Amino acid sequence: MDSLITAAARALAAGDPIGALKRVALRDDAPALALRGIAMAQLGDLARAKTLLRSAARAFGPSEPVARARCVVAEAEIALVSRDLGWPVKRLDSARATLEAHGDRINAAHARYLHVRRLLLIGRIDEAERGLAEVDPASLPPALRTTHELVVAGIAVRRLRAKAVRAALARAERAVRDAHIPALTAEVQSAFVVLNAPAARLIAGGAERLLVLEEVEVLLASNTFVVDACRLVVRQGSTVVSLATRPVLFALARALAEAWPGDAPRDTLIARAFGSKFTDESHRARLRVEVGRLRAALESMAEVTATKRGFALKPRGARDVVVLARPVEDEHAGVLAFLGDGESWSTSALALAMGTSQRTVQRALDALGASGKVQAFGRGRARRWVTPPVIGFTTTLLLPAPLPID
Image 1 (cartoon, rainbow, N blue to C red):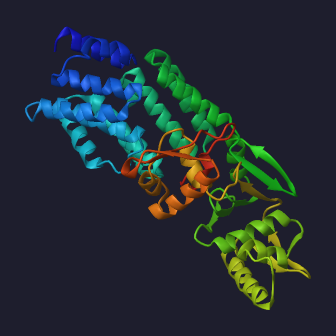
Image 2 (image 1 turned 60 degrees about the horizontal axis):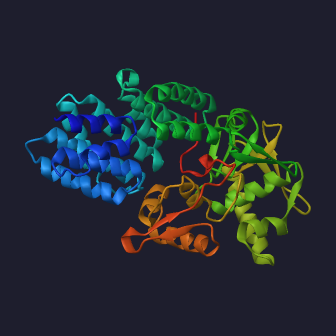
């Protein structure tokens, strides 16, 4: 490798894409194409970066498997940043195996982190945690150690473990000082901002207040009867009942919890559960059926008793009943949560991450676009959707991940 290629590679490692391009911008040999591609990616021109990296992989040819594998890893990183979640993961796994077989442990570790970050993004937390456990960050350079700790923090956030998040971010802050990469430093600082932002609203006794992640963790670890509107579960201590697939029962549980220690009128429950402004005997009969199902679902945690004007919730072992709600409630809050990271998303990537259909996502995006909350650019398969982050609020509790059930 000649001196210009070496100097360009060092500039890229230090987060200086302009310095790298000054050395290889006019060259079309395989190493120069690869470095130009990485530089363009760092500058934000992802389409051009992808083209250059593919050209570099072809130019290296089958006789240079390590170089080709590095190009694949760089292309996978671009796919992750551009939220191309349908990018073939098997190519990345094959590239990682090649790098490990040839002793390039640093790029192999980088490939694994890309895979783990993708798993984290689509809510497959257990798989992400297992993948992360296979990497020892101690011998890695500062930039990758920072990445490791950011992934650890991301998993801990989704597990609602605030102390573990702060510890991981503290380690990331120490590592990023040695990395001297401004973009990575900004990412660590952004993670601290998210951690300290309100994560949920507590509704109890007719009053509301915002909670940060530590307060949410403390609440869920207590013996309080919690109707969690962020994850669509009801929990008390270690007992958790998911109502994610039973929206009518969850609506009833939330209405009863908001009315506690009093009762909720039948008309209110019918409106909340069935969306009906008018009630008749058929609605009342249906309400009795659904309340019976709710009694059965919450049997180990609470009673649902009939009163003169409606129904009341009586927890068996808890002294308090609260509702944990999103800091900002919107019909399409799940879509906004993903778009809130500031990246551009396609409908297919959003559908994959949310575990729903593209048509459902498209309808949500159309509604959000009509209200000015999101914007689209590009056409056809290149169409992407963006929105600025919601200032002052974290979207942690809107993202799809199960609560830990111990």
